[in-house]
Image (cartoon, rainbow, N blue to C red):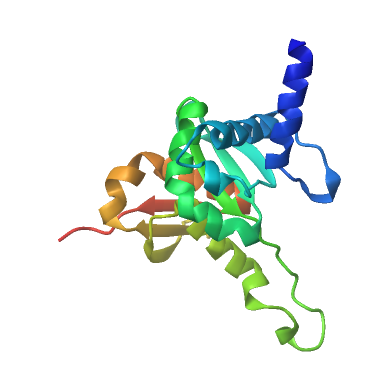
Length: 199
């Protein structure tokens, strides 16, 4: 009976993850889907909002100091619905994942530039630069980015410095390494987060 119950629970939790091209979720993704399903079932605060929400994928990323973070990819059309409850949802998920930080990213497709003809054939929001900028905003949400600076290292590589709204410092300071690790995992690019100097 217990095996059947577990199978049923897993099957029910599956509605919280819908991978592309009919792929099956891996064990970690199933655990994230189960956590979302449990919250929908038990949290009066989140139940109504979570009912129609699901994720596309989830992965663990390594953060400095041997820690790990959870990065969830959600359908772009559900981005606003997730953002509406994101602070509460992240807080509850972080409890379920033993304090691992949780980052929510909207899934966006990058379109290659057309080989010929008008460049207008591609929406700017689908360009590599625009998608990476949008990912940056997702990673730190709901904190606002107040400035950016590109530095060139001695070896010629570019390092992006991103300044976050200092009013959220209390909530975000412990997550700066997580933000950098998540962005690097998603884009392959290095980024450093800090706060503007307060005069």
